[in-house]
Image 1 (cartoon, rainbow, N blue to C red):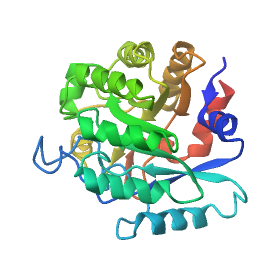
Image 2: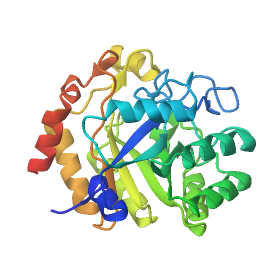
Image 3: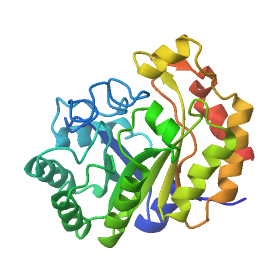
Image 4: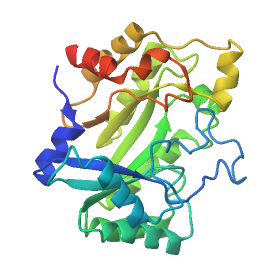
Length: 288
């Protein structure tokens, strides 16, 4: 079983080791500011799923430099991707987006931008801006789909219908943007078959990359309340490995695998505790 890893893709594309630097550009989310809701998605942390990002109190340039310093011992002559990770990174006035994106774009060590967002936050002016930037340096747009199943989407408070994702992929591909789709493996009450249906769906819709994120429960989230109330059970380690193996059998070799697992900050992790040993998880996946 072969798959195209993101690390290999980056080496093939840029000819050197490339690290992602997670940034918090100070944005919010329509699912938090009252436009769609105030609590965010049920699994989302207080940091807007950017718990490993640099501090939003710093400028984009300062965050990049701090991120570079963190990996200075691992990388000598490589390059970096500016990863706008925390919250919804196309949800702001267009002049604010332009300023933040171009600050990262103009950094000499940044070879690409990766922008995490929602499919319902890609207005025409945003698409035009992404098109402009993509002509200077490659842009990845990461779409938080999580699942194709309405019952699960409603439960996690996603806030948009599946066709919105389909339209976003089409619009981004029209301007040559590389699309990365996030899916969560292990959502409450989803069967293995339903999880694999989500994987197959996004592959059939032409996603360029995929992130398979293990569901993990973090303190302070709506998901934590349901977990502590005993409303659902987490996947076991063996169940998770089985689903990952089946997913890799579905995903075509030309689709880049950006992630095969995921872990929250250990200080906030409630479950599954086995996910905290990331090295063990990745080794087990590699042995498949």
